[in-house]
Length: 360
Image 1 (tube, helix red, strand yellow):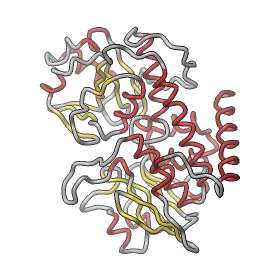
Image 2 (spheres, helix red, strand yellow; image 1 turned 120 degrees about the vertical axis):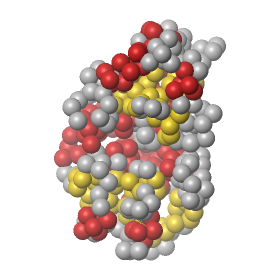
Image 3 (spheres, one colour; image 1 turned 135 degrees about the horizontal axis):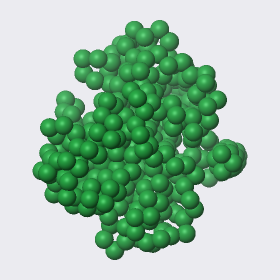
Image 4 (cartoon, helix red, strand yellow; image 1 turned 90 degrees about the vertical axis):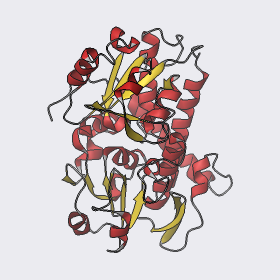
């Protein structure tokens, strides 16, 4: 806890320094270019390759999904939230990383994406969600929000590659995260704090990149859930950022999507050295490992035979500032398994591995 308080103090100091120097030096972050000149009461940012205007500072924001809620907490914008949905079981991990007090005042309207009527009742200026992170055709969409005078902000990881198609992801996932943190900081009036968070993530990524690397990067499989197919993540998803920063290789990096299904045959050919799990939903960690250990397609994978498993909460895998914590914990685990060289990286501040999935 003391380490976390020290981190928060460092971020606040950085935010203060950034605010003081904002008029004299441009940001080094590539995401900073997404913001453009603002006019009184509005600001324009680039969202999914479109220049979009938002009321600013927006002090009435509704957010769906724990990854985007984590973004708001990280930039110090919890008081800008008039409502949230889909926090689910990530209350524990968000409390551990941002403090219980940051969540205590939040109004959770629904365990899943709130209805349009529920959102409108909260009178938000802006709604933050993503395609398959609350937005879906036939349900709440950016268009349905605009129709009632609410400005939608779409999670950058979820940007559609082509309108009318399902494939998502148009940029590197670290760039997507930096973009969202910077944009949300601009929209909510927490630009300096957002810049400080981006700088902290960049510094921790650099430390991971400078650590000794394996000659052959360990093959890492993301296992969200499985039945007749396996739900996993391709090269545009948050796990791609986590795995590459940790020094591994996402075995699904040839899949041009964020989160998607693949065949068991593709999983069987992955030669996975490590399997990372997304802890959420009705399928528990124990059920997932039992399935992998009994399925002829996967029971002989190196990761399964050695039980090299890491089970982290959902909010650490979807695009969120907790991606860097997941990367540090995955790197630490791979060092313990002798899959990457030992390093002088500090022990991760948190151990978020979940051995037994909580009851749904």
